[in-house]
Image 1 (cartoon, rainbow, N blue to C red):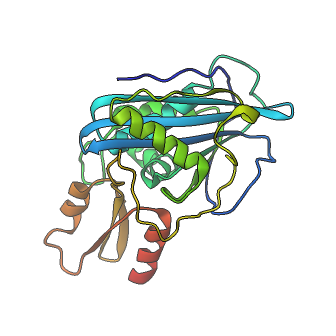
Image 2: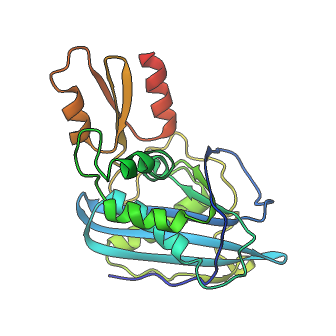
Length: 267
């Protein structure tokens, strides 16, 4: 299947930060901006990933679209791959060393994993609380290598909600998942066909429409046993914790907002 183009830039400084935003912004901070998304037709099945990288320069931005696909994969692996490839595309130049990075993704799995779960997994030698091997360990380790020595802000956006950057990477990922090789742009922002790329305003809040080229997001699970709440990346992990336990609770959620709502209800 298709493979991504390369953008040649680099960055340094170590930092993790998680933030959710749902408003119109201009990239006044002069950050490098990356939109990422993954898709799969079946789970597992044929999959694709896409990323749009915007690198500031004097009075404009350089835009670089990348994407690729695999014949047998999962949606979560493609979400991870999009972030990995987006960050890898920044290697090779000292031009961007002074710029922080903002990564916009609709994957709570990626954001929760890289800002919360990976630290516990590493301490336990990549096994879960239930002594099960961590899924997608190879990609989590690769992503960890990419975020080290970088100043990164992970920002969750709503999928399929009319946000231009998210819609574009969804299109790229879906195209590669169906073995199509979309035309990928590389050039100046003024010549880019996607307008208002920094606009994060949600437009389709009531829409249940899903891309024809992708499977729904998998989400993750929350459980409560004897007053203790835990988050699980997979159902099997959650099931082992709650099965047969009196008054145990569990719920599948797809984003941070749903997670917070469930935890508040349980409290």
